[in-house]
Amino acid sequence: MIRCFLVVALMLQLISCASVPEKSAALFDLSGRDLLYAKTEWSFKGRIAIVSKDEAVSANIAWERLQDKENIVLSGLFGMGKSRIILEKGRVEIESAGKRSVYYGNASDIVHSELGVRIPVTALKFWVLGVVDPSASFVVNDTGFEQHGWLVTYLQMQVNNGNELPRKIRVEQGSAKLKLIVNQWEI
Image (cartoon, rainbow, N blue to C red; front, side, top):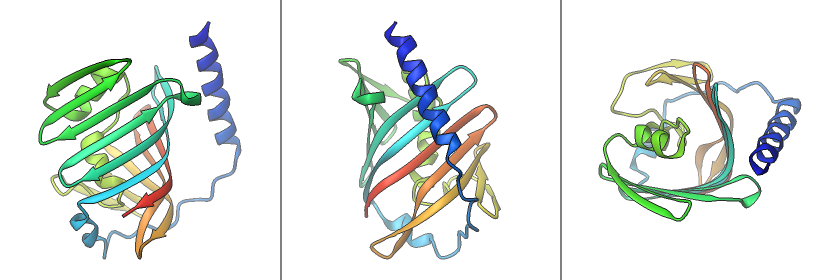
């Protein structure tokens, strides 16, 4: 019963988001963004929606990067449930439903296996800053780029402390879609 309610509530939320007209993505330019690679400490708060062929998840997100450590907190729909993902030098720690587990390996695969959602976590730490993952090739287009098989589109940008940073991002691969809205940056 609760699961059914959550699915209906999520669908209503996604429908309401879809009914609001969104401005087309502005022209995106990677040039002059290299200084963002030097930012080793930053954080943001916002909302994330992930939709795939079999799954739809929406959550609040708080992401903090301190040097080589990522701390990602996902708070479930209407504040129900909370998951924490900690990434540090090949180590992935996941706290969810009162359980804490530590893994070693590909962070994106581990998060998918444990939380059931496909998120390109390793590359996303670059994409949220509006830059490409420097470890892989990419193809630029007018609104973003394609990398690791994902199409990254910057729908809206914002300025924080002189840095142009993403406000709305859409990331797609086949039937998997991720939309991120950043409400607050600290950089």
